[in-house]
Length: 481
Ligand SMILES: Cc1ncc(COP(=O)(O)O)c(C=O)c1O
Image 1 (cartoon, helix red, strand yellow):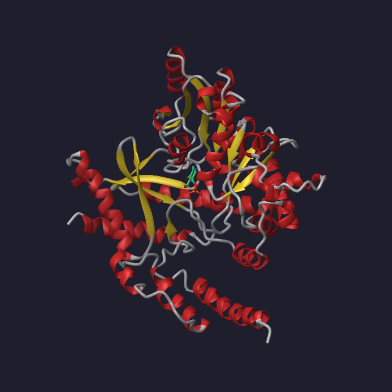
Image 2: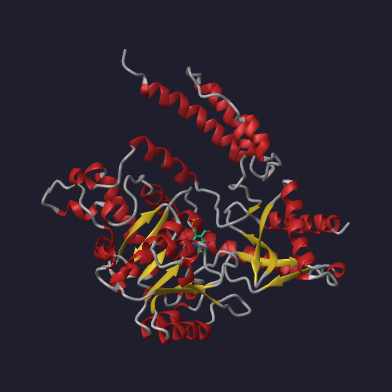
């Protein structure tokens, strides 16, 4: 008897659909967090290697009863955490479709339609950020890999033979400049690329957390004077802690002046390009040699999907990454090789992630994205205005995108030392986390602990933010006891 694969899909599809529908129906009321400890969950999932199979219904029951309640409810409208969105339904189901086809997008031959769709999605993202028709890119596992791929291109741009001979071909130390607010993936990348963590300059920011151009120039001049080579200037379009956008146009000019590669980490903020109203924040992004732009942040596709976009086009990525293994070297003599994505980046086997971006963009269109993004920024301003009415909270910086940073600073706390005030922020965050009614993170700004709210769910409404304000007041009063 042949394997009943279609019946199995039908049975599982119905069961899983029911689970997903019930899950999202309950999101508004559900606890956002679980208070289980790692030890609790180790115990829950402490089970031997299965020797015999079990029924899918029992496995799915365990998912519903044991996995879901102890998941972080990132899709909740009350999750105000990192740049993690509620995924659009079309994206969730696109992932299922991508899994069913199981394309291997490394080589075009193994993913003909998928590779062309990936190229199409990349062309759309390039168009969105204002790049010309020669630009291209590659989808990545996320922003960390996208930054790494971009910095690899930046490194190789210094000297043609660095790729083959290593850094001795450059003859000098290469330096990367980014703000002190830059994502930690920069630090990892300069290490992986052999530049060394000490050759990442974390440039000081101004009082609203934007990179200081005068400090950047001073750092570059210092390095040049001792014979180091400025390799890359990187700006943030939506910094992780604050959501702010660096002055990209000015950064582009500094990079050009010193002959550096200019990279923009728009992992989060790239989606601002959809909005007529907020696109101005990205002025100068089109001058970047490379851009990181994560659909899995502000484009609401499920994890994982990032992108590196390259202004100069695919040739630059291929110069950096191309290789021809014997089992993938068959010369088919056509244009197909131009769609072999293993030649354009770090990944070998690659999932058909382009599908969810393609479907999501078709579902909302650029205008649909603009509406949501604008609404989320307006909601963040609303939340900030509510905080401004409260004497016990003080805001830090400005709301530029959909991130608001602030500190709990009641009268009683003002006399405390810095460490105690910082601990107060952590304590309040922990209480909110334990309440299960919302989740927000803390971060460190200018050396001081702060609370951070990011509105990244298209389900969030004013009433959720009103609830959050009440929760902050209630738990704030408790934390002082
Ligand atoms: C500005 C920025 N760049 C890069 C990254 C890394 O992205 P990922 O976590 O997808 O690797 C993040 C993650 O939050 C980010 O905020």
